[in-house]
Each structure stands twice: as structure tokens, then as C-alpha cells.
Image 1: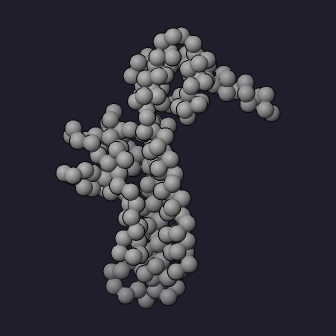
Image 2 (image 1 turned 90 degrees about the horizontal axis):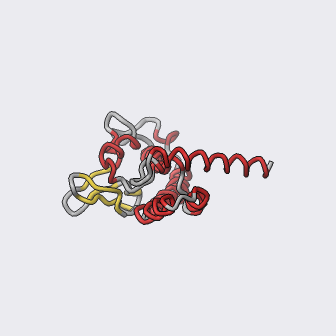
Length: 196
């Protein structure tokens, strides 16, 4: 799925793959000309900031989803390393004298068979939710031009568009943002009070 553009080229996220019969390959991004990893964007920063810097305005993930996407990616990388250490009984630099204490095949299997598929599912939910942003944002701007803030907020809720996303939508002015933001949260708190 495309994540955005860099140097005029569309950059895709490759799907997860079970590699060499013992570990998950994931986080590979690029295209026919380029191949690299999402965690490589985080040199000296976190994945969130690395993605923002790398893709700029072309990033196809809404601002309200970028932190969650980055969290899931970082969790994948951390757990991948943990699963490898637990599966091998060490870091594989040399024979680890504590290998028998470190090795945990059950936990390695749980991470590989249960945790990673759940992480992949959540990542793809974010990507699928963001696949039509351009069209959704265009419809939102069109509704806003008609001046019915209630319909704008209803459309936002139906399409999981958060107020954080409004600032990135071309065609929504600061004035529009303030009005929509106020209406959205006024309605949110009113509904919360009714449910309580």
C-alpha cells in the first residue's frame, strides 16, 4: 500500500512475510528503484517524526492516525528483536552462557503466531481507513462550503475523521477549523452528558 512520496517517487509498504521459516519480515518500504525500512527513518528521532520528515505533506496517513501507526511499527520492531533473542537464547554474537534461561519457545511462538498478526491487522486497518483520504477530504470541504457545520461533523464521525485531521485538509481555513472544532467538541460533551 502507498504511504506517500519521497523525491517524487511513490513509496509503498510491503506486506508482512514469514522469512526463512522462523521470523517475520515487515517494515520494508520503497518501490522498484528504492528499498529501505521504516525504522531507518527514525535515526536520531522516533518513527512518527521520521515519517513526517520523510514524506512531508504526501504522507497518506491522517495526523490522528500517525502516532498509532508509529507505535505499532515500533512495537513490531521491539518484539521482533525480543522474539529473536528468546528463540535463539541470546543475541547471536557468540554462544550465550545463559541461553537455557533466556530461551522461551512458547513466548516466541505467542509473539509470532498471535501478537504479530494482531499488530499487522491494526496497521492495515489504519492504511485501509486512510486509502480514500483525498476523496473524503474533498467531500468534507464541499460540505463545509455549503455552511452546515452539523453535516460536516456528522460526516467526520461517519468516516473517523478527527479534529486533528482538519488542519491538514486543503480548503479548510483556520476560521473553518475553529468553527468545526468548537461544534465537534460541544456535541461530543453534550452526548457524553446524556449517556452519563
